[in-house]
Each structure stands twice: as structure tokens, then as C-alpha cells.
Image (cartoon, rainbow, N blue to C red; front, side):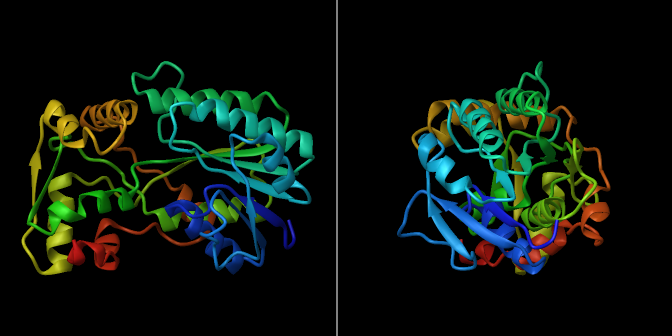
Length: 284
């Protein structure tokens, strides 16, 4: 697809903002979909104010777009919002839809987020769209949520010594940009991972080496983890995160896939690269 116009949902988030830059690097015209007009994405060619809960605004944002990137919103009705967006993509005649899903999404998963993503994937497959599904594993950037405790020398999660093939958001964005601007991806599902599976103690070692300060990892009981998040996140999200971490702790997210390198032409970033580049750990 030569110089396509791409609508990016969630354009102010970690994946969306990185995707805007990755698309620009590939010569695309980028339309950033934002909810707050006071938070425009400077790198985008245009910012359009729209909300997934307002179908008319989404339909207007899709006009003239050649492709759309669908990022999952953080909401208990995320699946319904995404399936409606996909319907609007078909109605608008947009040529291509790329859906950001999650590693190991399946309808019978004990993890609600994986069930929700599987529901969206199934709906999109039934629409007859030129579509591609990206299934990234645990985001390395998700570790920044622990930056405050890491600044004090330790962080904790209910995962034990299980390894996870975590992936850098920049590699998710690079893969999405390749699919949105390239050919041959119709109907494909790509699982996006880092170059190896790492344990949280190994992550602590990488952060220690990058910051020059000793950082330890402590395994946490799921109830203690949930209690620490109570009042910070809504109950449905806390419960979902506990399910996510139980999935990781069972060793179900350790497989390494080659999709990032296959799509971008470069190896995925390692946890050591992420730790080195994440100054937030030093700031706390």
C-alpha cells in the first residue's frame, strides 16, 4: 500500500504514540484518533477527536482512511467497543484493519482479557475485511508501573520464577506499521514476543545493571498484589491483572516467536535494551 492514510486509535497511549512515529518513518499519512482535543499527537499529520463510545464520531474519523489500527481500550466493555469499531470500518469501506489483540487469546481462557480479545478476533474474521491480528505478549513498558517501588530498590508481582517472552512496545509498533503499509498479511495472526523468555528476577538484574542501583524482585501473593492495587485501579481491572499474572505464573507465556524480526527486518529488543532506555526507573 503506497503512502496510505492510516487512522490510529489510542494514539496517545504507549503503543499508539510509538506507532504514529513508526508509520511516519514508512511514509504513511497518519491520522491520530484522540478523545481530548487538548492532547494532540504532534507527530501525526492530523488529529481527529472521536470516541469509541460515539459511533458517529468514529465514522467521521474513518472517512478517507485507507487503513485503521484498533487498539483495545481499557474498559470492562472493551470487546463490544472494538467489535462496533470493526463494523464501522466495514461500513466506511476502509481497506484494511489491524487489530491489537493479546498473546494466547482464546475463547475458553480463564483470563478475561484473553477471552475478550478472542471474541473480537472472531467477530473481525466474520466480517470479510482485509484484516490482520497482532498478539503481543507482556509489554516491557508495563514494568514502568513499578518505577516508584523500583526507585526504592524492589518490586513485586505474583509470578514466581516463571519466564515470559515480554516484548518492547516499540517492536509492537514497528510490526504494526509494517503490516499497515505492506502487502501479504491478509488474514494473518502474528504473535509478537521479545528475543527470549525472561524471569522477573532476571528483569531486576537488567534494571540493576542499567541504573547502577541494586534492584530486587520479590514474589507476591495474588491477594497482596490485588490489595496493593485496590483504589488505584477499578475492581474489574485488578481482577483481570491477577488472572493475567496467574497465566504467566503457570508458564503459559514463555514461547518465543520470530514475527517481530520477520515483519520489521530487525531483531526484537531485549529486556536489557529496554532497561537501558528507560530513564523512568532512575526518576522513580
